[in-house]
Structures are given as structure tokens and as C-alpha cells.
Image (tube, rainbow, N blue to C red):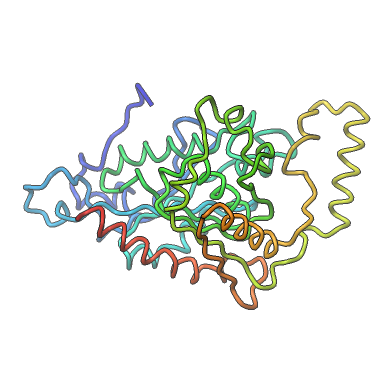
Length: 323
């Protein structure tokens, strides 16, 4: 963002980075483009190069390669800190950085729990905020590679990840999409059910780059027991009754009644991801569907399979980016 003054780790001697909270667990920072969004990082201190351009310095820290970046998107519960902390051991071992954004609830009124999952709403342009956060990280932490990211998310985070891939495939090196309750298909329906009107949502010239998606490694991960309807039938009957009452009584926030996040969920997540995998195959997209045995809607149990998917992708990225 033009005119935004900041500093870089290139200005800080390596021995002071930890004391300045510039490596290790990074305290939540406010997004410069949207102060309602914040983010945290984990940067393995032993693997971080504060200034990759300083190639003639005798300090061995300046000879370290840039760190690949995993972006882990939270679900509806917004457990961003856990999204960071669960990956610390992996980050230390594999020499990667971890970014966990925190998107607010309520940005589009009282039912704004899911706004960030849709990428672009009246109150929040979550994918633009993430792109700006990546730019900001690249300027503050030049030792982190931000042009191509490893994107992962579970539940609501899986929804965000899938839709971000559609609109910004060029920025995604590999992606793990975990157990989303709703998905967007590559058909002519309107967003977020389909991609038929992405130009009207994201701007003139926006298109879904199928060819880039086809060459992006994609994991779909879900539990074998994660096939129940979120909230149950009684909950969705209540939601529909509430929408009807609000529409009839002239709610002061009529857009909330049409909120896509309030549309009835009719399919369990296992069936939903299976259907998405099959539709991908019809478009020539090879996505791996990993089903975790004896797992319901539990992100922590999916983590080993997610990391098993990411590890070789990170290795390949590191090898090809330095070849």
C-alpha cells in the first residue's frame, strides 16, 4: 500500500530478532488494508534469513534460503492461534513459516459469521485483505517467500481456500481443502454456488483459470464419519422460519435475509467433497480425496494427513525455486 511506512528485518541484527518479536510466535498484527482483520505468524528462528540480499556477510544466517509459507485459514470458530500453533513442530522441522489470519465475525450484520468464506461481500473483501497481508509480510520479512503459498483450511477455512484457488490460482503452490460445509462448483450458477458471474463479483476481467488449477496439487480431506448435517434438520427449519419472519416484518437489514451463509445445508461434508472431487474430474482436475478413518468434524485428527500431503509439495517447491 503506497505511503505505508514500515521496517524490515533486514534492518535488525539476527541476534535481536527474537527480542523484537520478529521470529518465533509473532504477536497478532493489524492488517494495514482493513484494521478489523489481524494476523499472526510463526517463523522458525533457526531457519530465518533476515536479509537474503546480503550474500557477502559472514553471518551464516544470511546464507539461509527463503522460507516457504503455509497459510492456514480458520473455521467459523476463528481459532487462528491454534491454526498457527498446530503447525509449529512441522515448521521447525521443515523450515517453513506459518501465517494464520483472523477474519472478524459480524462484518455484514448479525449473521456475518461466514462472510470471509465468500471472499467478497459488502462488508469484507477477505481475499484482497489476504493478498495485502502477503505483500506486507514480504516487505517486513524478506526471508519469507510470499508469491506462491501453500494454502490450507478446515471447515469454513476449507470454503475460503477453495474459492481463493478459483480466483487466485496463480498464487497457490498447493492446497488442502478440509471438510467444507458448502462448496462452489465450476459451473454457470451464480457465486458462491458456481462461478458464472465472477466478473460481477470480483471485477471486469476476472476469470477462473482452469489450466492453472489443473496443475495445482489439490487435497480434499474429510473424516469418514463427517457426513451429518451441521446443526441438524431442526436448526435449519428454525433458520428458514427466521428468514421468513424477517422478510415479512421488514428487517432493517434486508441483505441479511439473503445471506448465502444462511442457506440450508442439505448434504454431509463427506458427500459434499466426494461430489466436488467427481466434478473436478469432469473438468480434468485431479484432486486427491483423503478420508480419515473414524474421524467426524475434527480438524486436529486431519492434521497428520494434511502434513503428509504438504511435505513433498514443499520439498518440490524448494528444489525447483532454487534450481
